[in-house]
Amino acid sequence: MLQVSSGKLQLKELLSETQQKGPGCSSLAYGALQELGPFRVHSDGKTLFRNRYAWNNAANVLFLESPAGVGFSYTNTTSDLEKPGDRNTASDNYIFLVNWLERFPEFKGRDLYIGGESYAGHYVPQLAHTILVHHPRSFLNLKGILIGNAVINDETDLMGMYDFFESHALISEDSLVQLKNNCDLKIESASVVMTEECAVVSDQIDMNTYYLDIYNIYAPLCRNSTLTRRPKRGTTVQNFDPCSDNYVQAYLNRHEVQVALHANGTRLPYEWMPCSSVIKKWNDSPTTVIPLIKEMMGKGLRVWVFSGDMDGRIPVTSTKYSLKKMNLTAKTAWHPWYLDGEVGGYTEEYKGKLTFATVRGAGHQVPSFQPKRSLSLFIHFLNDTSLPDTSRY
Image (cartoon, rainbow, N blue to C red; front, side, top):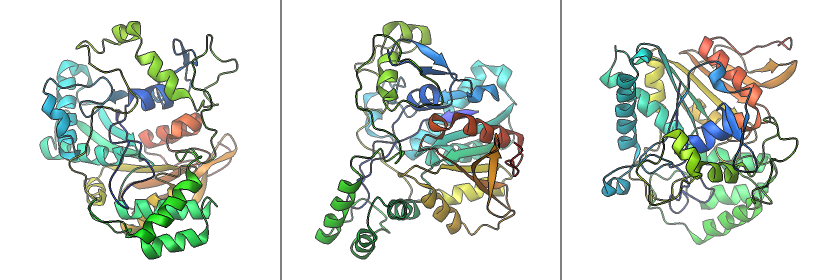
């Protein structure tokens, strides 16, 4: 399974100009060391503890940092950092995957699944499309894609975010009405000028949500990012530490860690960061990837879309609106799925091999907050089996 880099998005965007923290975030920072990888980093920034719900219990997982300038990925051509975008990323990711399989031919022909979260809602179907165009029948044995809290369709993503805010009592109903009446939520580019009325209500919404972790509206904030002399007592993988970003950054900037990882051999002129500080702009980003998702379905690929139900940035409402726009035909009714005798989330299956599932109690980075439930979902995805619909599981 290939996990491509994610992009964490800021709240203020799209109404006046696109200002994104991602695309440009690291698969090592999030996927590997805070979510689904075999280890997490202790609060000392030096030592690791095991994640018993790692996805590599079920599959070989390859974490890819892309594009160049993200994490330890680099380019020898400085101008490359001025022209990143969706098209270049898809092309580079494809070239990497082909070359990686040439380097490790024992993996050729094995079932391949591509997964990612957030802005990887673009990366994943775009890479899958590139594979289908260049290698429809080859050693790239693509079987399916998996995207979580994913950027899919700009208009529904944005509207779903604000509807989520109001439905979860983060903003008032009046603020939502004023937003819809005064702001252009159907923008096609970053050139739309924000009106004064829109700016007022947008600023009010930002103030209402400023002191929340918008990626998990019920999670505590990081109050003290200072590393500890010894690991915090009682650290477990099921109790996610909101300061984990800081621990991971300290860990991956340790010289001995980079040597052990065979990373940063080029001596990058900047320190490793969870989200890139050298990528300054993004050159192309389609407003929707719905046609690509439909292409995957038309080619018979397995498509699973999942949502942590406490994420406020690309919330479950956004994903539901995007799927509704696809005019899919339901195969099963909306119903709970179970794990350990509890509701793990809710799910619905559609004709064309698309499954949508929520993960109860999870934020934007689902495996961070619900590692066991996310592993269960991943195993059912790989096995092409429905999520359990009885509480015996």
